[in-house]
Length: 143
Length: 431
Image 1 (tube, each protein chain N blue to C red):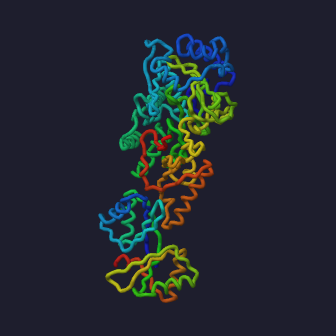
Image 2 (cartoon, rainbow over the protein chains, first blue to last red):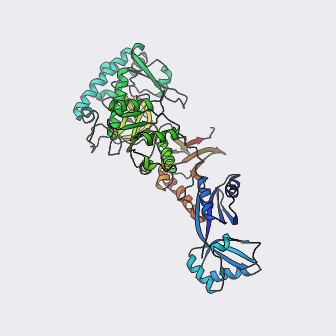
Image 3 (cartoon, each protein chain N blue to C red):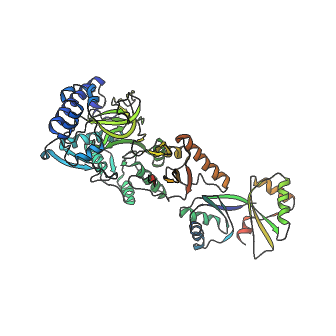
């Protein structure tokens, strides 16, 4: 139902993001999607990767502060209006979205949107009821 | 309850005061006769040895400051012929004023006994393995605890500071039971031991930590992480070194070895002696030292004295944990700030006490930044949560200090961990 997202604390310092990303790249961890939230003095790097367990271990061993969050991955048609429809379904059910980011892949026609919501289970049910496809962990990691 | 010298540690107030008066009178007479520098100071104040008849006359004597020690450097305050001295110890001289203190063999024996009292109070005995990770050499930490451990008859490991891997290996292999070092090094060792997964191999039961200011929260943190009981110890080279005062099981302050060192609390701005229980600058008078008996030496350490009955049975006066120093107090935007206050806030908020205060002056106004290392407990995937915790830190600091710092979250282990005394303040102001 949900997907593991890895969040990493990024100190606001030139080169810090490059260092963190290199830790994963050097170890051959493949990124599916990423997003960065930033404030004036720090950033939060959020990642979907092909091997979340290994990515966490690598980052922690390198001294990064890491957290793992369960997020929803929704598959939508890669055409105008699809995201709006999904957001409408959530809004109608009074579900607020903490943050979201999207990515497309070469292998499928669908686009994927990652949603961070308060109640994953309820959101999942609501989306399912309205015929929205959610992607499981395996589907995403194997992309 | 164990004591090293119960007849002194648990003496009645009457016995103690009688002894103190006798020793004070003798010391004042001796320094007046043997040390030109003292004679001059006393003459300037219009005090003669004959005016000092008992403990009550102590406030009549002039104070001695670090500037006096600098003036009299190196031999100006030596109270015995060179032939009677056997050793010196010295301060690091980081403030540009190096202090050299002299010892006769008797002075060293008394110093060792003071440290032995501290080790016994921490549960040490002949069967213990005392691991001394204070620096050896000119610094008093290593030699002091080393001597104390010998007096007790414990097996002494003269590790000195640094080489953390070797420290931990000896601790595991030889079964160290009592660790003596600075609290910041103890915290560093605890972190490393846990990282290496070696906590289960330790036989440590107690730690005797001193030579820098630390907080109650830091104590609990070290105790929990190492599985030990942590005892505070206090001292300064000028007076003798560690063992001027030490903590007992009650952990509510350090008993001053006042059969050797008289303690007073004064108002640092007026020099007036304050009543028991007042917060002020600690002043010591050595009443048994032969070579370097400082009289009314202003330590610049801020604390409170208490004669409340202690459950350990010792009657020696207790000094509180240090509340700061008259000279490491920062004045930021007109407000007095002690680094230990920042540490307290961090520990209260569940953070590690790894911080750095950066003060600067931009356009004639003070800037005040506290850099804090991010921890897994404080981190979240949402900016809202992290910012809320950051705001909580700022408001707790404002509540404690009266002014708001800018809090900057930095990556773990980016604030330098020192193996000796931690540098917590960077003051870039050029005034």
